[in-house]
Length: 308
Image 1 (cartoon, rainbow, N blue to C red):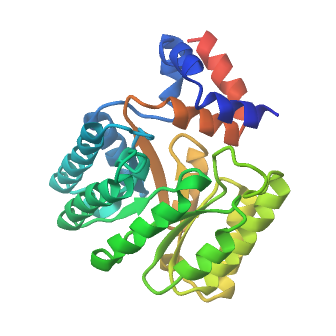
Image 2 (image 1 turned 135 degrees about the vertical axis):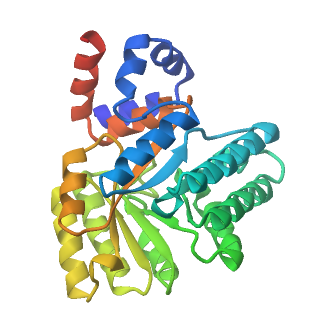
């Protein structure tokens, strides 16, 4: 029951105000979010790259309903990509975009605005020598996000997609996405979804994840296996071997601050490992979803919030 409660709290403005105003909570969040400024994310990226890992960077923020704010978020990404290139980090670090932060939820022409802003970020990524992945949000945005993806891939065929195994439609979506050159990140999903569109029980989500892995590994695209589950990591490696994929034919992805020792162990064993690193001031929703994914983190959070 704790997971669904946390997911509901992630969209509760009163809870947001209480948590984000408490210095003790903000201090603990640094385990999962290295900072709020560009300097923080650049330092964290450099540390991870130096340890043999690659990175995908998310500037936190979603559900933007102001076109000027969406444009400002676009410009933050464009500037960040230039900084990554200047520091020689771009070949090891891409960016992840939530289209709702690019204006997708605007009441008029939201999809077109998001496409235009995302296109500008992709142009900056191409100039920097790196890539972009479009994050997937709740089920109501899937069709719009996939439509934007198709438009972007006309000029930027390397734009990555995200598929959530919890959604009942995902296996069909994957079959459309596994063409040659397609980069696809497979996640379980971190949004509260109705049972009509999503599996609710963890075993069902895990079984769907394995079915999706099978589609990815035997397809012609590039699988990005985003999980911290040791059993699913083992299954992914087995499926990759079965379908003749070498270490350069897929990658594992994990979140910043979660299982960092395992991240380094996998990288040290020859696997490609990418760390999803968020930054920015709008960390509340992201943080609550991480707690919901692994409620054991709640105990760590509460202990850390009351001790120094």
